[in-house]
Image (cartoon, rainbow, N blue to C red; front, side, top):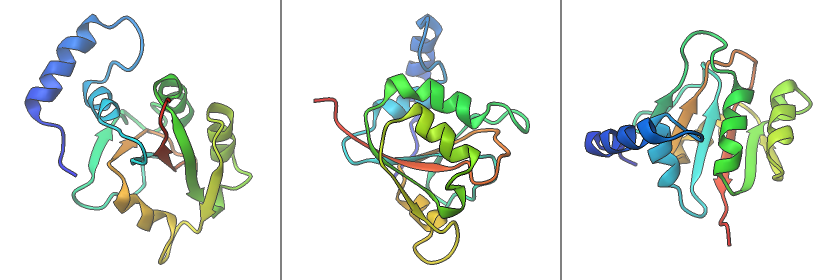
Length: 148
């Protein structure tokens, strides 16, 4: 999983200059455009460790900016999703409610740590979108669907 080339980012930066709505971040826009059916990606809080070699689209500015929920809201009209995966520790917590409020997908749960845990699943992601969120367990792995 290589990162987006500098020329591709420059191309999307020029397009983003002309956009009036939607995703303006050039790196995020390019990564979303490259998603295919069954690809997985992560939307994370600011503290999730990401394995070496996984592209990180770092939106975090300061603690709390942007919020996990704001990023989910921005992503919602851009995506067709099949399912989500969250840490068991997020069940019944605010982060789970944010995901359920923004995406109508079945959610599965695994422990946050350990063999087969949430963190181990991150290595399968095409990329990670890092938010400034500080709410515990505000991390979700989404599997892409297909719009037809």
